[in-house]
Length: 206
Image (cartoon, rainbow, N blue to C red; front, side, top):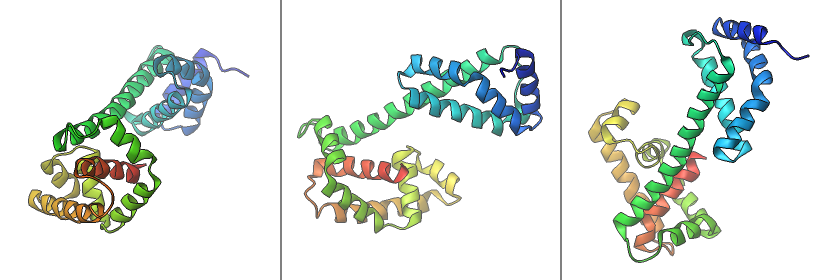
């Protein structure tokens, strides 16, 4: 039995009051319309679904500070649009990071796309990357991900991990040195080394 618009408005107030069941009602009532709307933006229903779920989780996490809304559907559409745009920007940022690493260390030897395709499809190389990363401590991998995957600077890393800036630099420097030794024993060229490190950190983040 379909819920009325009035009942959905009541559910929004119940959600703000901490009623988890109200969130489920909102999800069921708006799912089809929101997923279709998201698909029109990004062309991917799975991505639209993931973003809608993230929106709902954020609504629950911020329920005590949610605003009054007169048009819930419009509000959810705005939230979903922002979430999809955010995810699209994140994906583009990761590609730009890989391009930046490649251009800094050898901009002419190989086309960027060729290196990325090779790194993503070479199973032997993936195994070597995994093995190399296993030589690092959990702390080293955490800081490398913050530096190269999340693109934080050393001040931000120090604040996030409750350590000094110098300590953050030393940990990352030592980890990179160890990784270079491990990866330089493979069939990687110097030009491919840094893109490989970034891609390896992406494997860890998946």
